[in-house]
Picture (cartoon, rainbow, N blue to C red):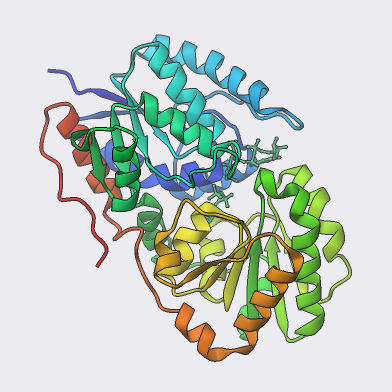
Length: 382
Ligand code: UD1
Ligand code: UDP
């Protein structure tokens, strides 16, 4: 029997970070063949990650264009991926998470009767519009997938409630923790002098990231909250690696200009970003991946959203939802800065999202799907 061809499709920064360890294992597998496709939904931010993990996609669909709508992006991705599917005839396709790339790739594969394997399956807020369009995308992928690789048992239960058979679900942990542990072994130096100086001077740092589409209208609130924090706490440096989405930059950056202790920088390479997180006091974010990584580093996270599909770290006490209102963001950050007992309660390192072996469980589950081995035991947090 020839080895089944597994096509991994990705297009954005977080997808690349999360598929990197899986691609690494597929490349060294004797039982499976690996094909990689980048849709190019992101360009600079994706290439940063590809460089870091040594990924050279076999195909690049090059779909990114500034000012493009969701349907333009999805339309191009489906059309261009269809040609690659037709030429390469994979035996299964891996999609990750809930992006336009993941939804388009799942749909394109489904239409060609190629089985869909969903990595990071089963995350739900229960609100179709939050996050938008991601909650819709992941529900759609859940309907199309044959094999669901859930990061946590909670995610598995969400799928079971939607009628997915337990036999088709494997709890792997999240591959982002595999990547985080890999990056922790690299001896990273900051390439930006201001960051290197912060490290040397052991400055107190608060890291801020924001990019969610549904938060763009609230970014003035986020910007004003951070500005006020920087005025109240002049000894703290607020570092914002700004997402490259021009809409995001237009919405938040004007509120932060002119502050000596607010450092706005371009997106950081993954190793520098995780290093910055590890020397920060805490994180203000609306990112999904950051909510998964920071608890593992023992860093409190204030999530600037009204809900989250990642409730495990909230339950563990490391993550707190603070919404997108200026006053609540400001007040909760002040509390965390001033009240060391609140800080200590939140700063416990917990690992609800993985143990660094999620890629191994992923590849074992795929091999089992093709009758080439058995699954590993489901991930359970220590
Ligand atoms: C996408 C995902 C979101 C994920 C986020 C990670 C969808 C619907 N959303 O959102 O789930 O959390 O990626 O960051 O798929 N841009 C560049 N260079 C880059 C990247 C982006 O210039 O390297 C600009 C482009 O103008 C692009 C815009 O940012 O059009 C928005 O990118 P897009 O992928 O559409 O949406 P994100 O908000 O990044
Ligand atoms: N990240 C990075 N550089 C940055 C900002 C984020 O490498 O400047 C990483 C971060 O460690 C996490 C991922 O990007 O793994 C999160 O991406 P993003 O917030 O864009 O998307 P989301 O996770 O919300 O889908």
